Length: 125
Image 1 (spheres, rainbow, N blue to C red):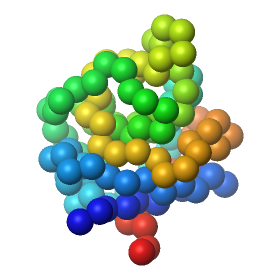
Image 2: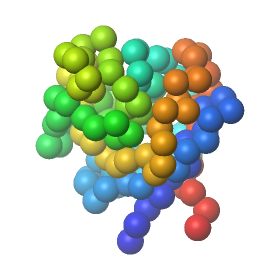
Image 3: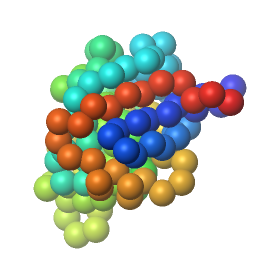
Image 4: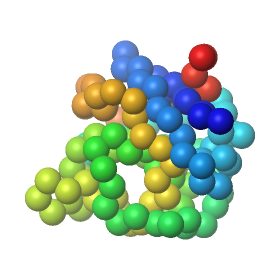
């Protein structure tokens, strides 16, 4: 079963598809989630009510990946380099559990500033 979520941050809305990981399942069960986002380079992150260890942690992610950061119990949206990146790579602060990917162009998230309200909810089919 493909699970899609909708992410709204200010005037930016995107859909994403979740993968089959245990972390993605825990996030799906916690929906809807609402928080104030923070930015770190071309990443938006915010704490969520999910507390899990690292699962297939990745030190470098792809453009449009969404992930869970275990040390901060945070949801992350990656849309470009972070302060930890080397060159054009996209590098989180430390290993993350990739839980899915944005459908379409994630670059709209560049318009979102720190403190913006972010809502994650199941996408209507």
